[in-house]
Image (cartoon, rainbow, N blue to C red; front, side, top):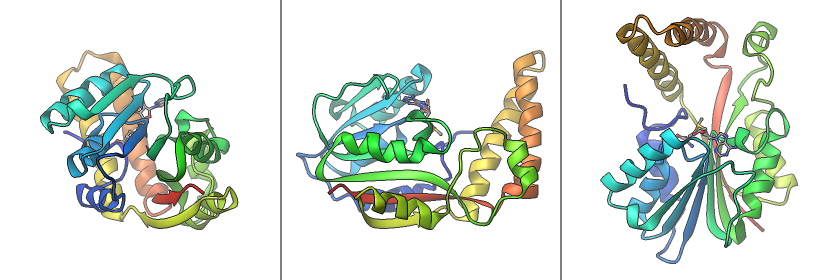
Amino acid sequence: MEMLFNSPLSSEKANLLISLLELSDQSHVIDVGCGTGEFLSRVLETYPAKGVGVDILSESLEQAQANAKRKSVSDRIEFHESDIQKFEATKLFDCGICMGSSHAYSMGEPAYRETLQGLGSLIRPDGLLLIGESFWTVDPKKEYLDFIGDPVGTYRSHQENVELAVEMGFLPLYATTSTLDEWDDFEWRHHMRIEKRAEESPDDVELGKRREFGRRWRAAYLKWGRGTMGFGFYLFKKP
Ligand SMILES: C[S@@+](CC[C@H](N)C(=O)[O-])C[C@H]1O[C@@H](n2cnc3c(N)ncnc32)[C@H](O)[C@@H]1O
């Protein structure tokens, strides 16, 4: 049960977002919390640019390397296994991406603001930031917040995600949101993957616990989450 992205993002919407970047052979792109690198590799498939992917998880980066190789972009891409807080950039980038990875910058309410600040600091003036971040489409029920626990990970509306960036001096160029189909695909693929893995290894206690949690998560998604939590993709220009 492969997942292209670890975000509620379809292949078509990823390509749409990439088409907005209009990069050149001189462009340098950084993807913070790049995961298995699908998005960054696609950016380099589309443009003759150079890319840097940073992630804290070595297993994800192994997949990212393999992915880049399959897409014939590995000669223009570097992956760094690092906590972004410790990553030292040697140059400013033309474009910074952070999809569903704002927790790399900070946990809880400050995470999105610190992503704008941290990712922004890696980008040259007039450069681009593409950020994927959750939001509430309607006020969440208390039971749902209690179920998720602390940190909830979502703190603003779609409008507030845009407005905070404006307050910080960024220029919004484009925004779109995940459809319900993209959310369902994301949630159910996770669910199916855990069910399948737990079934294949019935003696694995850890997998058994993950399956139990996955089932509770699925119930909470259907009861409260579906249609309550949104996910936005925001393209900003740095002043
Ligand atoms: C929800 S996944 C999103 C992955 C990818 N951007 C995507 O959309 O498919 C979040 C990623 O952030 C990475 N991450 C978490 N904390 C990090 C940190 N402090 N520094 C770098 N990466 C981090 C995780 O390992 C994970 O790959």
